[in-house]
Length: 455
Ligand code: U2F
Image (cartoon, rainbow, N blue to C red):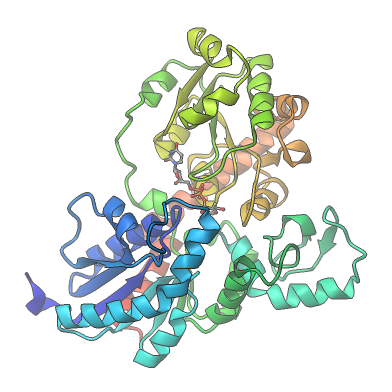
């Protein structure tokens, strides 16, 4: 099995929810291909591993299942927060136990830990084993910065003595940001229940990451030069190694014939709509969005689960399908869709992967954020990068959505400006992962950390 050639053993800990484990495995596959002498033991729950390890992968990645901590009889998926809490209650113990099993199997002790940054507590294990601790933050530099600076932000916010509301823009609140709207900070930084696990987890993560051997993000440094500079001063080896979707080739699957449908649309005319893996606007907003698409006669491709069709206005699905204005699919090959010449705008929840994929394809966005990092990603899209608009008032109304569609799809100067700016970022993204690009250089540094060459 080639074990004789293997000289290092890396343990990888996944946070087994939403798109997290997939992204980590994408990274590990890249690392495994670059370092054939290293064995990677990948730990995640049985349920996520089953979905991830469908194809034959690299010989030097071993799959290990860890328990999900759910009580007997619990039906998945429950409430996401509940599922996460059950997992976190057993995670530290189970990962540790798993490492001992893998060390025995492989016949080598662990030389390095690569983890999802949410698993901040694994820094203790790395210290105990005296090995480098490498953490992957699956979202952008903007949100990471708010977690690293949570203590500072809280201090400055306290000085404001409640005089600022959620809609107020505060100048110089966070290093690397000229200004930020308080309401766009991830909940749990200053707003919401600061003692809940969803506030304490990223807070403790932020404090711990500054001690990591390397902090990796799925982004490219030219997107956020100021934030990158600042985060590099806070963390060791702060490495932008993305966009991941431009490094790995997109899946060729197009089960629902999205590409064929797009082939028959005019260039730059179609709105692609998707709210990621977990989110859907409430029924009245789906109605408003549907009405706006019809009123503006915007051709659209909508990735939406069939269960939500019942919320559409009467006859909307049938009419728009019959007259060719729209196409509804339960899943779209998003990266390929966004790259299609027919796409004019992406209506998105601003999940980090979606934002990055839109940038990688040079498509401007209309953002309707829900929670977590989505509002701050939206802030960046609209106010910092100038490549999209936040839906007026934060929710879809017929009027606001018509306006946003007209704004982004029209041929006027501000729409042209948006397209030019997103086109320029697209070029930077492609250069970053091209020969000698910044993300490729950073990846080499990472390989050095993982193989022990740079220690
Ligand atoms: C969580 O976000 P999500 O996983 O809900 O959303 P994204 O980060 O945008 O990732 C969705 C991925 O699913 C793909 C799409 C993205 O790679 O290409 N996809 C698809 O291929 N076809 C479809 O029809 C629909 C989606 C979290 F909620 C966010 O706040 C975080 O920013 C994010 C990253 O940590 O994770």
